[in-house]
Amino acid sequence: MKIFVVLPTYNEAENVRAMTDALYALPFADLSLVIVDDNSPDGTGQIADKLALSHPEKMLVMHRSGKQGLGTAYAQGFQRALQMGADVIVQMDADFSHSPDYIPQMVAQLADYDVVVGSRYVPGGQVDERWSWWRYFLSWWANQVYSRTILGINAKDATAGFKVFRRQVLEAVDWRQVISNGDVFQVEIAYLCQKMGFRVLELPI
Image 1 (cartoon, one colour):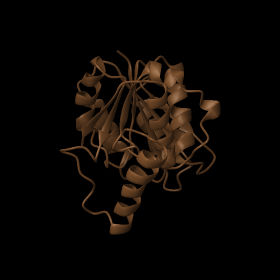
Image 2 (cartoon, rainbow, N blue to C red; image 1 turned 90 degrees about the vertical axis):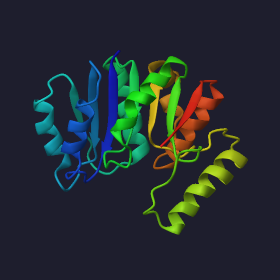
Image 3 (cartoon, rainbow, N blue to C red; image 1 turned 90 degrees about the horizontal axis):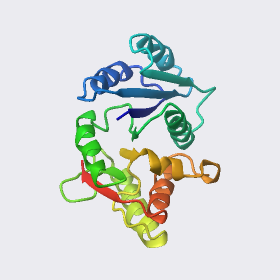
Image 4 (cartoon, rainbow, N blue to C red; image 1 turned 120 degrees about the vertical axis):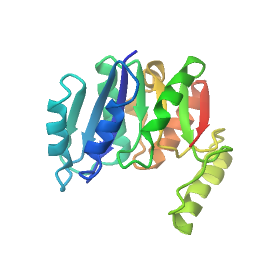
């Protein structure tokens, strides 16, 4: 089973080495990374290039000309991982807001599900205690009002950015029709997964 982790980066020079080490330490026989860097001023892309030399054929760094948005970074990273033969694709942030320790459990659940979401809004999950009240309110509104009430999404954490997909899920997406960028990209993907009838599990994080 080929597992690919897609990591968009922008000014993650302090995290990219530690995150790379943590991911390659996971108990998987075949794990690769796709880093999508938006020309980080702090040199993240150059650090990633040096790390890739230590992981030949297991780490690809995609360099983009500037800050083009989270949604397009994931979309391009997903498609490149598919081209490289991924069976499973992990979507996560590079700043350790998503712990790599959850990934083995999430991947194991793909035996029964098509998508596994690291969810903050199911029993056992929680949001970062450092969040401001305004950020908490925006997250609550996006999930409870916009996603569930207006769009009819069943997922309790439709804005989650920590997900594991079977290959077939991302192959089924017509990326030419995905128009959102930024955080709303997560909502659009949650909507499409539900609309296409994929089995989704929300795992508390």
